[in-house]
Image 1 (cartoon, rainbow, N blue to C red):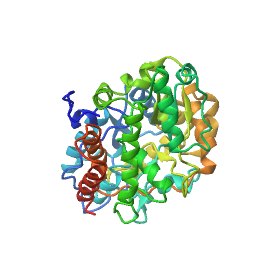
Image 2 (image 1 turned 45 degrees about the vertical axis):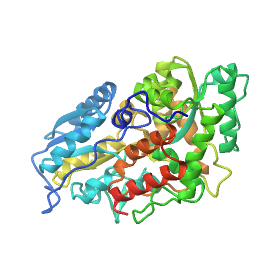
Image 3 (image 1 turned 135 degrees about the vertical axis):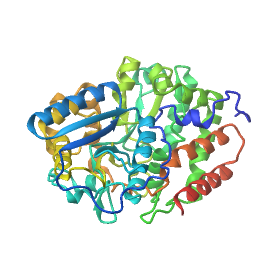
Length: 436
């Protein structure tokens, strides 16, 4: 691989590219009100914040309208936003003790905001959680309290263009038994056929995928007490795999990888029909199929049967949280309950915020799901019996992990650092961020 970066694309550009979930701006000086947990009953006025695309904004407003029609005396000020802008605005709002009453949260930042006393323990609200599985609820719990209730669940998958696999003269692998070595050979064979790029490598810089690899080895990205939970040997093996795939032609040269990052998800090789495989979350399939214009297949991440435990897990797509300074606890509790449990809400939301955390609603809406969400639902249903318990809530400072991993990945693929140096840089930088 080349030893320089001719593209001139910065790490910040890569982080903003939208591939596999971009990292947001780190939480700055957010600090909630230490004096209490909001008002039990107030004037019924709620600020409601979320991020997403225009279709999400439209149906969420419809959910709000349905909620207000059933709840006289409550008013809602909606504040939709894009992902990156959302976190910048939320940081400013919380820092000024003017946090939104009800808000979407992400697992990378849940503990950050809770530790800054910005989030209300949701045990204080009247929300029906009877149809949400314990393992799902645990993804928003730490220190004995619940700071986020999952909107729904996703899982990682290897997304495959079957037409390109066929064009390469290959068959789809048995994803319940295949190894990482099998994956490396499979993608190398696709590239060698000339039909497509076997894999673009753009997600090998993502900490969530590496976490699956570490979990397969009995390790994890983080420990229960907020330290790094993997050995340097495991991360060395990860980076060596990237270099070996580069040498075999399974992935493109460094400058092409960087250009694919910068192009964004809609122009990534899988979406444009020039790449055969890529790792994504299941709720991203619809957007990819829409751009590609043809069907995709979901396979399990390689290595699930060869390690000490399965690495895959059900991830909370996002969370509903409530501000510590909420103006009206009763009204906020009603809104969150409606979002999680009502037919009106889930008929509109379907699987856009992950397959519903409410398992009864998940089952009820299955016949209504569009094809891409039905594909994800079938994959998750098949996968769930084989999963191990999910990872812990990431520690404070973990929101920087994606940017850090992108940075060290770039130095590796351009030949500026060795495998060992790349691992050491990642572990040193992330340890500093999380105070490990």
